[in-house]
Image (cartoon, rainbow, N blue to C red):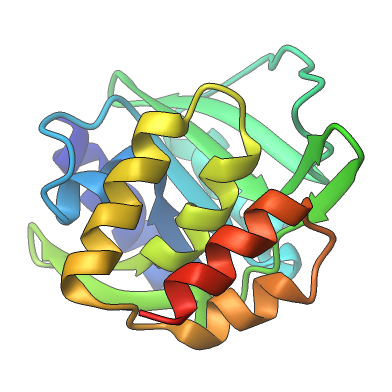
Length: 183
């Protein structure tokens, strides 16, 4: 059901020329790191947020989102499409103890495309989620899974890790990124 919803949404976004990608559990599932994705997390370019909000409202139901101290994201919306929870983010910002990390999402953030039910679905990069998950409380297991994967299979988009290092990150996250870049 989740992949039917994803391909349906993907078709609409692609038809409208949106710069987008899926991440989180769908991405981890693609790389064989988890068995069952629990929802669909969609990242979009800031320039496309209004267009995507309109599309998702036309094919699903927009939900009221509860505020979270973890995020200072410019646009963070939730929907239900075909019975599947969808998180839509543009301008993702994650708060941590001593600051806020602003994730840059653009066309270079897309690592590859996966055909799902005949629809090209862009995937964000494991490298970006390696950084993002380190900043979100309770994601240690996912960080370790990605770290192990990158150690075994290599870093494919080192430029994204280098770009992340230019952002406002805690020292321990910087150290882990620099360590993985040396592999």
